[in-house]
Image (cartoon, rainbow, N blue to C red; front, side, top):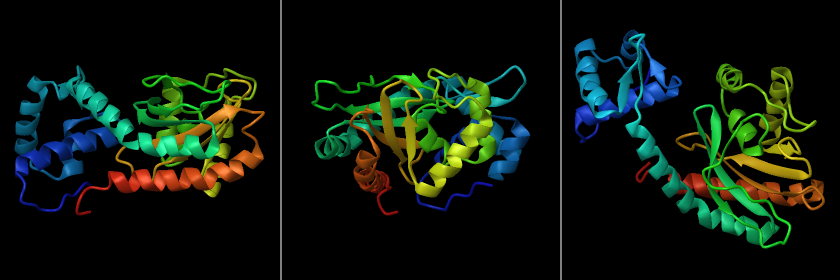
Length: 254
């Protein structure tokens, strides 16, 4: 059940956001009865709110009568993602200055990660990931860092929906391998993409704690430079950057 503290805001606006958040947390689609149970609002109230959201495109009704997130949210999400990435760019720049390798930030969008910011290394041989690029979760450092923050049933749903492609011989190809790796990530607090997406490239990644949507930052480079010694230097710096980004995301007055 989702609860929201009383405030001086307009109650109907709070309820609209509550509905959208609940649908999002459920994977983007819910039945009317599921919505009613989750938000503990009277059915007439839910109907009234949905009648406003559906014509405006923020919610859509599916052929099976369930309600899903609507296409107009995409524009809001893309704009918020760009702003989110811009706000964190300074922290990524710091990582590049301190470690000498490219730094990235990504968020979970549906069943994939999408990169929303990057600071490039100045080295002649460096990693480049285009902002806006989408990738699988199971074979990327940022993706695995995010998955490690989620319950196993959601991880299973995400990976089952996308499949487990193996772009390199080192890629994880089964759920058993993935869950074993996620357990290690949870224990140590960071993820490693050890040539799983591209041979010759290694990446250290860490989730941003308390982010409004699963979010992670990473540093990556050639395996000749990004080795265990690099990892020992990178992990505390990644943690500091992740915590700083989390603090900057904290709502005013929280």
